Image 1 (cartoon, rainbow over the protein chains, first blue to last red):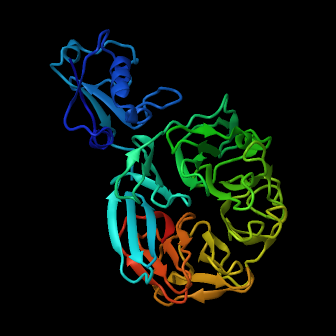
Image 2 (cartoon, rainbow over the protein chains, first blue to last red; image 1 turned 45 degrees about the vertical axis):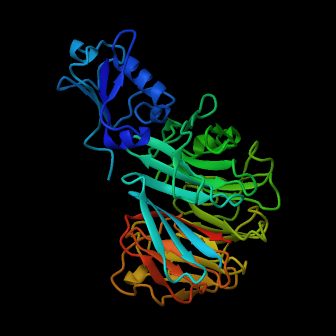
Length: 99
Length: 371
């Protein structure tokens, strides 16, 4: 079971409280987590990754196990602690992007 | 008794202001979508309780929200704005080619007759249409693919399609405006487009009378005379009497002809309103006096409307989508400022009062007249 923590604006959009939990059949990567997340909450499509390019939006960050994973390849395996649910995968609004 | 609903988009959320036909006391609801930029909200003329809102954020991109109950509740609908085919390039600020890239929706224009149909004007400039209530969007690519597209360039606010006017007498005719490409018209419901900028002069571009490249800030029409258009350009207030084929300047005695908004009185098609702004670098009213100017002659002869508006130390701006009129008699006129005030006049501009003073910076104002 994967635990995902969304920022407040995206929790509001997806109408969820607290963490989201996902069951992933295959490798646990940024891409597989985000694919599963968007499949369950279609309103999040385009809010984390660009619709056309599927690239991470510039002012969204991905953290796991106290490390910034934003610049990792999307298919790179995430730490075992994320795969086992011991640690959450965090989607974070960067300290920029608004005014 | 009839009523009025003002839809206000701000830098940090949407607000819905309602009043009865006297327009003296207002109820204010909001912020809706707190923390998001709401570039524009507009109601469907075919179903006034159906509203569309453009919700955008530097972090999380674009959402489109829809209400079916006049703004009490909202639901997100489709936000996938993908250019048709290979989008090509436009000019960047430094003159180099730059690929079209979707950034946000500036303006939503619901169909005059179909509550499920709505147009979206976007940055980078293009026009999208939804015919299923905003769930899915397709680009009317003929505009972006106009041969002049590679020469379009962004204005200071981005390369945005900000004005969409639907001709009430001809469903195939649409006028749009882009900063900084100019005005365009289609007569076949968006398949093909022609630039309609003859008569515009912009000293800030190499050929001041070029076919495209003008920074049009806003166009307005009266529904009874869709061939007569009024334009607030970067500099100059302009008028066309032939559906944009030719323009002539009607700035007349305005203290400055720079500005963003322009609108037309609901019952008097020759009565128009602008808010002069000092200059392209000084985005505030001249002399610190917030004045709406009204012409009852379709331009050239303007009178300052000041009663109830601050006449000293006022340095706000009024952005291009932030003026609207209602359809009551006498006509109500409304505008919002970057300082967060929404001013209203229930007597066609003779006197003004703030509905609300301390909202986030106002990006857009639309008004619905309710039965």
